[in-house]
Length: 274
Ligand code: GLU
Image (cartoon, rainbow, N blue to C red; front, side, top):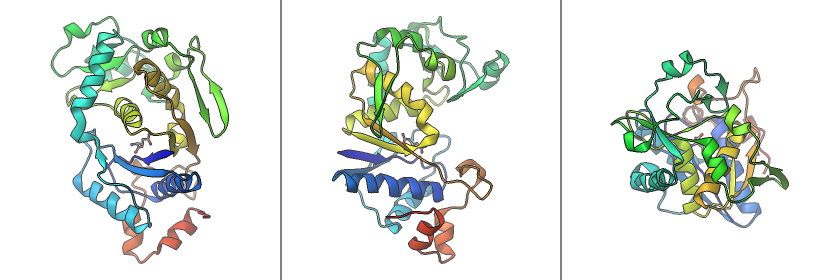
C-alpha cells in the first residue's frame, strides 16, 4: 500500500492541509503502508521556494516523516513531455491558444475544472502547434479510445463510469494538459503520471478534487496505467462554513506555530482524533 500527500508550493499550508496530511499518514499507518510526499510544483508562475521549505517544516512539526528523495515535479518535465508525445501519437490531444477571455466570450459555463472548454481549437492538429500554444485532451476521442471499462472504487463503493456517459464532456470538457505560454505540464497530466510511476495504490485527498477523479481515471485508461483506490476526505471549513483555501489567505500553520500553538492545538482546531 502506497499513498501520497501532494501539495503545491503556491502558498502556505493551512489547517485544511494539516487535516489532509494527517489523514494521508493515518490511512498509510492503518493499512500498514507508506506515505510519500510529492511536491507538485509545475505552475512556474505561482510556485515559490519559500512555500516549499515551509511544507517540509510544517509537516515535520506535525510529526510526519516520509521517504527521501521527494519527487519534485519541476525536475521531471521530460517525463511529462514523453506522455504528451504518446497522447499525440494516439491523436488524443490538440494545440490550443485560447485565452481565458476568449473562452468565456465563447459562452463557456463553469464546470468542475474551471470553465468547460467550448472546443474552439478542437479541430486543430498537433502538427500545426504554434510556439506557446497550450495542449488539451480531446475527451471524446479519449473516451472512444478506452479499452477497459471506466471504473474506480472509493472507500469500498464501486463507481462505474460508463463510456457513453457525457459527464466528462459536460462537466469538465477538454482539460488543459500543458499550459499555454509557460508550457508547464498541467496538474492532471503530472498527477496521473506520477501516481502510476510511484506505484500509488491509494489516493487520499480532499473532496474538492472528487469531481476530477473520473478525468484522472480516463487518463489512466488511455495511458494503460492502473487505477488506484480513491478516498476523498471531508474538508475543513471556517466558522462560516466556507472551505479553507489559499486564495482566501487562510491562516498559515506557520503563523499558528509562531503564536505558540502546539500540534495538539492544531489537532483540536480541526477536530482530529487519532
Ligand atoms: N497538488 C494538488 C493540490 O495541492 C493535490 C493533488 C492531489 O492530491 O491529487 O491541490
